[in-house]
Length: 285
Image 1 (tube, helix red, strand yellow):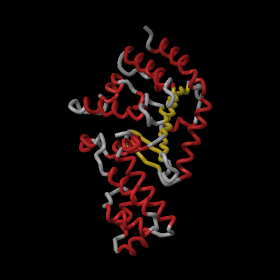
Image 2 (cartoon, rainbow, N blue to C red):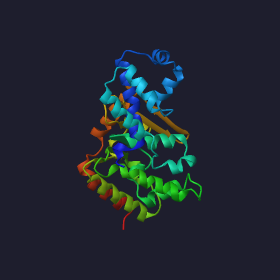
Image 3 (cartoon, rainbow, N blue to C red):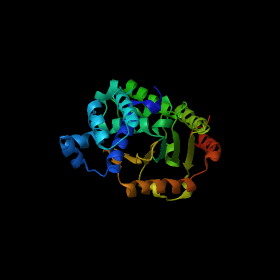
Image 4 (spheres, rainbow, N blue to C red):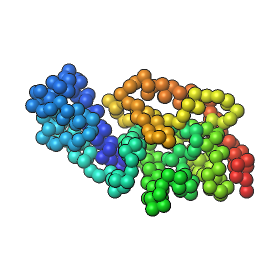
């Protein structure tokens, strides 16, 4: 299964299409529920992706919105694909919902912008680096499969439908001693390697740039393949996570901050020089 055809991406597409079709028809969720003799909560849950929609109910909704028959057929296939299992379902019972949400966002996005001030982003971590980080949070019997999940997540950066990803990392994160010098050196060399991929850009925000707007905390912005799907911001801290969506002003503010940081951070084509200097200072041979 390609990433574009994964169940999460298909569910997100279906949700956006249903909402857009209803809005084009000039109907509220309550009006749809009354017309179809459903509860309003049923319509809300279907549009929110909180419950799967049957083929019969989907066809009823789309016909009520005046959607053409051929398009209805296409969306029925999308609904069927959305009911397939995601690769992380075998671990779902042991993962908290905030992390599942992050996996769902990564699985359905087409472009990521991430600023990280504390550590190397999970999508860029080597296995030894990831293991050192996850030791802090995972129980001993959980460590192996959590490392496996982190490595599996990185598949979105490779392949024919790879995500476009832009990373800005504060110098504090790349200087942080994670594991021994061998772990640090391998991780820094990995950043150079990944930066050479055509869909990945990595910049370091060096100390000499002084104060900047990213100092309030790290964040990720997810963009999606269709215009009907609004951007989402994912914020994470020690106490949990927050998802910002359906609020254009809040989301656009984070995009603005990221674009500003891009102009301050070292350019992607200077990454090798910055990393080589850091290797000599932080993890010399």
